[in-house]
Length: 329
Image (cartoon, rainbow, N blue to C red; front, side):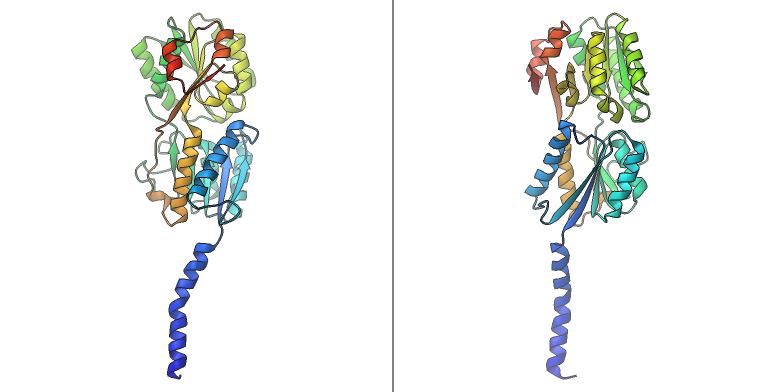
């Protein structure tokens, strides 16, 4: 081989990895998002915008260098699993999974594609990850749970209804296998306030009506409605029945107050999706999900619906109004 040919060949070989790296960096990345919130829910658009806007600020532009596939399965577990498998079939670089059902479906579909979960209560206790600090495996993300939340919900009930003696705790046992964590938090706060808490598991729509009819017949009783896919999907039914029996109720996400519920106090969902976009950026740049710590909530929202309070004949204390992030007139 002539010297000039050898040098040309050597130079091409040296340049090849750089060219390959540039080609890899320039390729369009793919993200799949598995939602359990319905596309018709106003919060869906808020969460979606929060995620894509944060991605854009980090240099990822949908339709340019990143493609995002969306699937929404609401409360149907079979559709959640089918959509998770469908998203994996599109060969994504990562999956964003919403809620405990979404994460369960995503992990059933893949143990290799990186998963960022959002709004999951107990990822360690349910066996999704090894620990909060070192998740291991292919999943990391953002939790909904913090132990003092139960006490804060009870504080709001007491401010609205100082003579409250009993507080029901409503949830769907299938969609909220993590409900025990929250109920223990409520029980702890109840001991402090001298309130009797009791759980109200509801399996279907008829159970909602029966349970609230029974609660409404007990004087000085309040209600806490836990967020899960069932209660969120049936929030209009729950709010209607609560109003029918004139029960002071505290909800755990703002969608309930926006739909006519009295008060909500819970995690800022949009902020969780902004944080998820930051993790997505890190993973797309080479970070391993199992080495990114799971983060607990730091930002909460208190929303008060004054129209509903007036309909229930309740006076919202000025101190509670002053703490509200939003007051719906």
